[in-house]
Image (cartoon, rainbow, N blue to C red; front, side, top):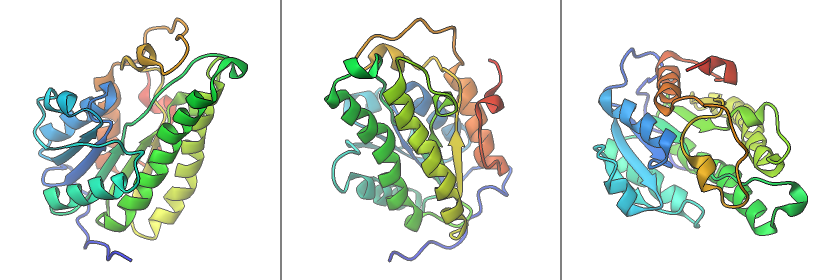
Length: 239
């Protein structure tokens, strides 16, 4: 078993300056917003996404890693990169996600598999790789979303993949306490990240105006710093 790093408390500090963070899904609307806010606070960033071109277009200082986290050993490798780049690993924010729309009887098996592989298994595999390498007082954030609180017709499979993350986080938080790691399940309402327009299958219904990604990122980064243990949809309020 990998020996856990010595304490570098995150939650007790009013500033996150000098900490090391791994952001996956870093080129997405929410991942990039979180990365930008952490960069402003002086956090050493390791930014992960599938596209090297989109990573370079971020204009956010950090170690850039183009990897598909669904591949074997990818999660372990990006965690090791983050530890090496930041001299440890204090913060993990998993913002990877895909969406599909349509009734279950019309959704392809390929789409269902992709939903659960990306939305559910990647967070599980990333947590497995990260926890033994994180410093005491560290924070791991998964974004399940408001759909994990109440699923919707036409989004049943997507909602189930996110509800599974929320359930995972509930138990993971108890396990991680033994390592003095805090796990936050973030459940913001519909956020204007553009994800709905990039569905892997089906067409998005007409949503009301959503939250701004920078607002959601501000809530998440504040929670990382102030010791918050859960972020239900109500924590994000209006925009």
